[in-house]
Amino acid sequence: MCTECGCGHGHGGADVKIGGTSHDHEHGHAHPHEHGHDHSHEHGASRELSLNLSLMEKNDRLAERNRGYFQAKKLLVLNVVSSPGSGKTTLLRETAARLAGKLRVGVIVGDLATDNDAARLRTAGVPVIQITTGTVCHLDAEMVARAAEQLDTDNLDLLIIENVGNLVCPADYDLGETLRVVMLSTTEGEDKPLKYPPMFHSAQVVIVTKGDMAAAAGFDRKQALANLNKISHHATLFEVSAKTGEGMKEWVEFLAQRHSVVARK
Amino acid sequence: MHEVSIMAEAVRMATEAARKSGAVRVTCLKLRVGTLSGAVPDAMRFAWDVVCQGTEAEGARLEIEPVTAACRCEACRTEFDCADFINECPRCGTPGARLLRGRELDIASIETQDH
Image 1 (tube, each protein chain N blue to C red):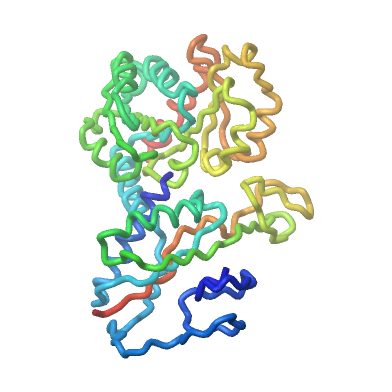
Image 2 (cartoon, chains in turn purple, orange):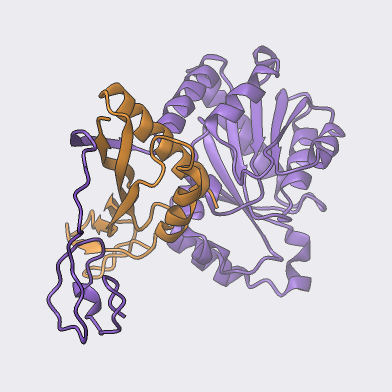
């Protein structure tokens, strides 16, 4: 239908212009296209302002501020992302427990609602700050800055930020972390990296979790590693089970080594 | 889903720039969105209608210019469009080509009205 007068004539989609007053097809009826009266269309001067600014500019700026602050405190900071239920909290609790006496660990955990994860993480004996985001599907640099203020960062070596369980939105938000860590559990399917490429591509570390469940879930390890190699070929890979401890030694040693690099700067 | 946060930021930046220039209304917002930016134009349009309400940008037209992602192979210097992050060179097969564009999430310009 013609969008200009509603007269029922077909127009080619590409030609349709909405909001004009003149058009050139035939009508089966006559009606005036002009008004019978004058009225003012004064709206003041119209201008186009060229901005060329990134919509992520504010977050990126705050993330850089966080990064500088974390560097000054010689803190290794992880931004841990994964889908819900991939074992973030269990792995992080186990990581914190294994680092006891080696690195002083603090955790910031983001969830839409509840502080269940914070309560579980506290059982490892580390300070935990919960961010409840309400409806927001990701953490941003400002939330992390506010949460970090509540931690005694002078007496920490490793700050773990457990992001909201979501493989889409957190990919766009730099938090000022040293390393982005993405987790893939053996129960999720081998094609997760192909389905969520921005997140997997942006990570420096990939951890395949729930190694103990691999056989039961029919996890095709070879296929998963091939998929990861396509998207995250630059990332350091760990395969772990927080439950049996498999692979945990290598992961924890990696963190200690990376912390020594941060502390030397 | 983070399109709401992104568009709320777009409203903030656009109205701030308009105010600084002495304008009172934003009548059009022009964005450049890369195909690998992680933001979906349809979701951005949906969010825009909601987040612009009650601001100086209420009712403003939203124009989104898509930017097709492209890579350059470090080995043979071939440039090619890429639909995902599997940046394998179609000419020589080398993986890991460098992304040249496609992650844009920018305000290109705004149109404003003075009174």
